[in-house]
Length: 132
Image 1 (tube, rainbow, N blue to C red):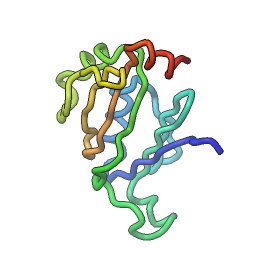
Image 2 (image 1 turned 135 degrees about the vertical axis):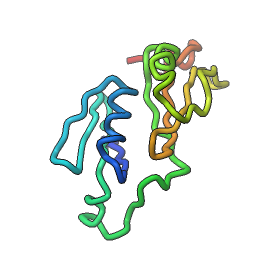
Image 3 (image 1 turned 90 degrees about the vertical axis):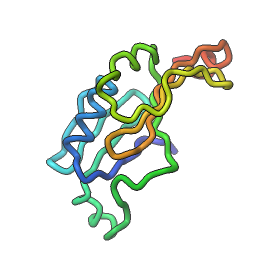
Image 4 (image 1 turned 135 degrees about the horizontal axis):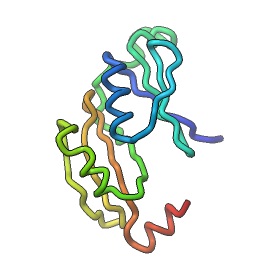
């Protein structure tokens, strides 16, 4: 089994896709007006409009209602990402901080309120764990 993607359902797909394009530096691939994907080498962030939900099951997902999942991106320079996002991100939860497990992390909320963590391994153990 391979973990291939996570999907966010949103009421404003253009706004959310634009946010993730700016925050990650990736360009989204659109499959119509209601679905886009941002692909990395290891996984895909899929973003779907609320109009896609009934294709699975009516009311199966609600936009801007997540308070438990953190979307995480491994980056080369978390401090550089922070500098790039200053003045763009409206809800900065925590500026870059070195965590006890060895990652330097930047925690923020996307426009729908989802938690997003950009992190860079900084201790030898963390660097080894995430070696590419």
